[in-house]
Length: 190
Image (cartoon, rainbow, N blue to C red; front, top):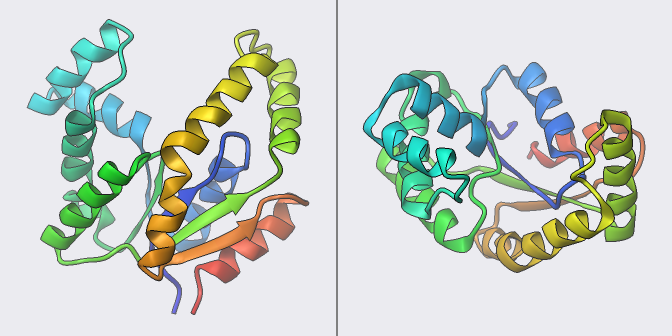
């Protein structure tokens, strides 16, 4: 059986977006990302979207309760009934606990958390190369290392959280894209 209620987890630059796109195409399930959820709620003019708009206009981080509310709205929509790929949510253990409650209310469970791993220096190299190719002057080594530190402080604890729940699959995120995709696919089966 292939898991269809998935969370992709990993540090910046590990390839979550690339691998999510492959899974979307293969499994015909939607990818749900925090940014997309927030923008969709704003565009739809929902009450949570209205709250979100203010934070976004001011350039502030959207508080957990708002992000969780947006996730609850999105996960309740009909297109996710057959499964989903979460990317960027949850980012903290508190958000993971909220996700468990949301999914419990919907009568489903997260089936697999696929944690992509790679050496930090390799990820910094990848992100610097991507920044150079895309002309992203704001992505320099200092800002990338800051993003890595934030990931390790806030999001990396989710690895232990999902390991304790028996749904974690750690996948080496280094190699050719097709090789990594095969590893990810293997992690969703069983």
